[in-house]
Image (cartoon, rainbow, N blue to C red):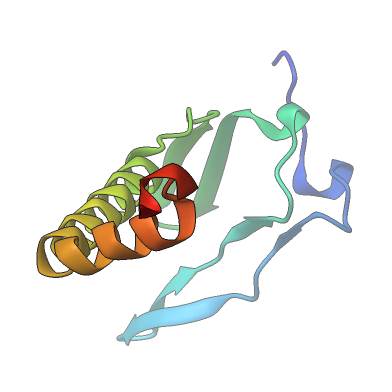
Length: 117
């Protein structure tokens, strides 16, 4: 098949298989699990991965398609909007509570000298 590679052909520093883990054991038969681990996925790693298993009871086949997912910034946008709204509420609250003090402070420090009489 086109682009067919085996685990042994891949970069062993980034791609390896996990140890075999026994999930169930019944009447001398074992159900096991093994994982393909890809560290630091690159563009060349994207594609279809197939697993073929065969024993005395038959054959099994499974496929997984690894594709690039577009980034979604909903959490970051919601957090940023929430922070801005919180800041706005705090500033409005401070203005409502200390309006006179703010006006007197402004007039004292930035007011014109001509009106002092």
